[in-house]
Image (cartoon, rainbow, N blue to C red):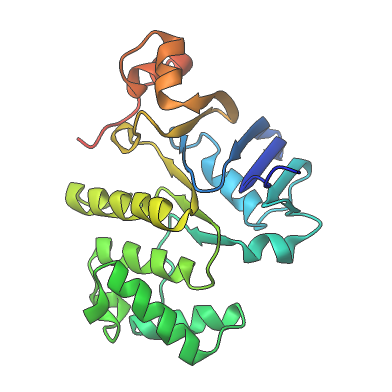
Length: 250
């Protein structure tokens, strides 16, 4: 009996912008129903990797597969299983929350009625059921992020990518969003790849990829990385691996 395919399989991926090497032989995987943190400073290559996974850029070196579907050769099948929350805000601020959902759902072949049904259920789960008719511009930063997560789940993906989703938010909003996404992993067996440069967003039981200057320096459980580096915190482990300091919430 063959093993279930990995939610995300990154194998020997590289990418350059002219002479600048943004990613260099990066390999790691995300298991179904797991929470994986891609940990790195700004400029480490996290957003470049997201652009390759989502096919904004074509991967010329290495292979990327989503639940066994090669992103380059089977992009439709791969991307149908993928939901994405980009670092930059992408809601249409002049549309209501539900109108944003209906527009997004149509891109996945989902009609307005079904989009409203799914959107209402997901908004209730996110504690925002009373904001469906509000224009997106009237939401707080944390509410916008939660709405973007709901939108990314409308087509029922099995893998969710979040690129620095808590940037610019206050500590409570950050904690709420992180808790919400972790609950989705537990309740839906959703696979998550969460990128951050904030060490307090990493739990000891998380799978962690330490990305620095385009290279994956460590791929393991956070606790195992700390043990391997002889450190007591993931921030200290990161510093020992890279020679650079990570930020915490402060």
